[in-house]
Image (tube, rainbow, N blue to C red; front, side, top):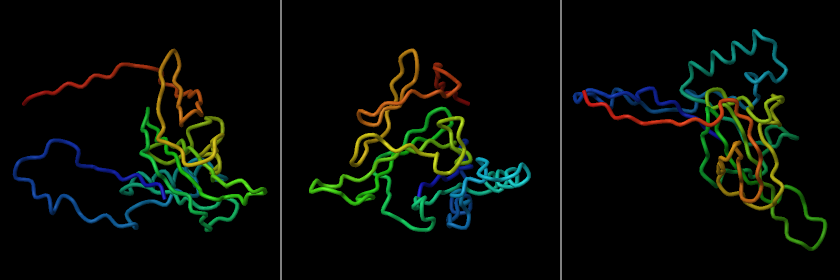
Amino acid sequence: RIYMLKDRNTGLLPANTDYATLYKSLLAGNLHDATLNVAGGDGADDATRNAELSKIQSAEGWFINLDDENNPGGWLGEKGLAEPLILEGQIIVTTYTPNAVLATSCQPNLGIGKVYYMDILDATPTYPQTVDKRPQRHVTLKFPGPPPAPNVIITEDIANCIGADCTQLDLGLGIRKTYWYEVEK
């Protein structure tokens, strides 16, 4: 699975905060199963989509199952082996599926690498922007084997590189400087 957990207590907390009361155990039932991509418009009408977005917003996070798209509920061993990248409100995650297709010759099967592009808030697809069906949350990488973590290269444009496989990203917000200021009270 790919998980996103919400931390709603990110502000400055008073010195006398009871952390045992503030932070509780997080169970799978507190998270929304976004595997079917209803929020992304996967065959849903507007009312169903809006209800799904409301459920995601009230949950303590979301998850998607890394199951076989050709056989929902089946698992081929797909797993994340590298850290994700969060960029302009989207999460970019690489996964690896070993031996997904049987080799047809005496050469070794190196498996399949994928990169997922999802909105951090609701797990809807973000790349390519024109597609919102569940299988299109990800792109299969050109090179076999376990993929490394995603990296961003910024020139005039923004490119996401997974090893030698680079894709230009159209994120909409463009390149901008961000500053961090520490304020004492």
